[in-house]
Image 1: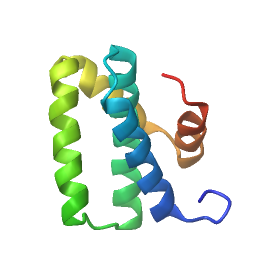
Image 2: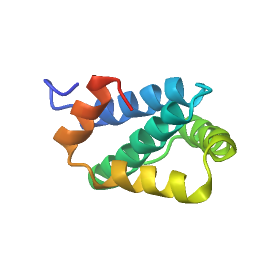
Image 3: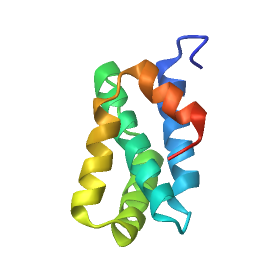
Image 4: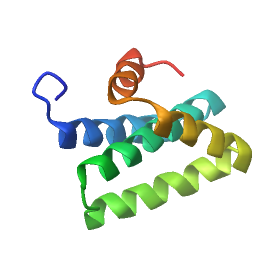
Length: 99
């Protein structure tokens, strides 16, 4: 998606990677998911991408799971870190597969 300049596809990839991290029992995985969702939200807003009903349902479920794992300040900090990343930084973070 990056090579093709497909920002919709990049955003969807962030969501899918976040979904994989949400299910992890480790706090670091939950923080990674929050960062990816923050990056996805920023990209989604930048390209004017509308929420599809299935995306909104998944997103709501992922957020509920993250809030069970992370306290509010930790979730907020991780989300904001992801939201502040440039597109290149967010893609590199997603590709690195590390928290």
